[in-house]
Amino acid sequence: MHYVYILQGSDGRLCIGYSADLRARLAAHQEGRSRATRGRRWRLVYYEAYLDAATARRRERQLKRSGVARRAVMARRWRA
Image 1 (cartoon, rainbow, N blue to C red):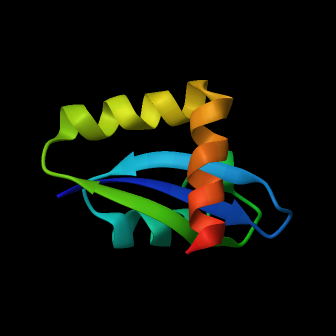
Image 2: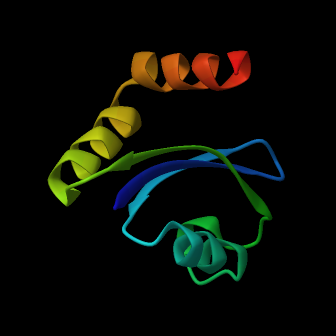
């Protein structure tokens, strides 16, 4: 499985990413092994699972580039 995820930092900032191992990637963010997310506590607020890497990466790129897509995902998350 391949995952696209959204993390929310202790300061409210969002981080969007892709990983084949979601648990290991979240641990890397928490331990400060990712330079972009170092210095904050992060919690997983949303994820989507895909069967192939290409589709997951395409979705990650869409979420990072499109504010409309990001807002739609966050609105869906808060409704659930």
